[in-house]
Image 1 (tube, helix red, strand yellow):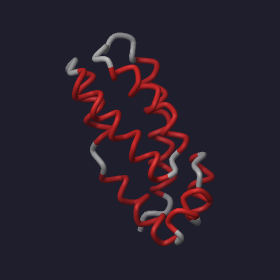
Image 2 (cartoon, rainbow, N blue to C red; image 1 turned 90 degrees about the vertical axis):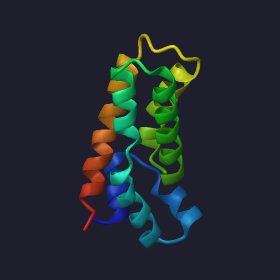
Image 3 (spheres, rainbow, N blue to C red; image 1 turned 30 degrees about the horizontal axis):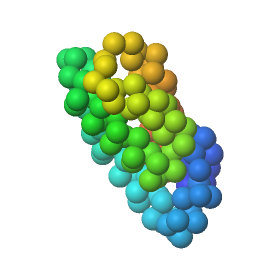
Length: 116
């Protein structure tokens, strides 16, 4: 699978990122590094333990990483969840987290196809 095909599989913005980074090799390098990012797990852990501030920071971090990597598919639900958590309100996040989880799984699956 090519990096472009990986991005197409997950519903991400390859062309936009290519115009910013200028190289498929850089896109692949940073996309594969995403697999090591802990913000998604930190988000889930913070929500499970009811820590609204930690959950907000983790969601905000995940959102920013997705924006920078062109992961539009994961950025959009992460943004919705981030805004929900911004005010410290933690009730009623479950559907939003489910949307993030679904796109996160799709993103990781696609990246695993290009990781060496």
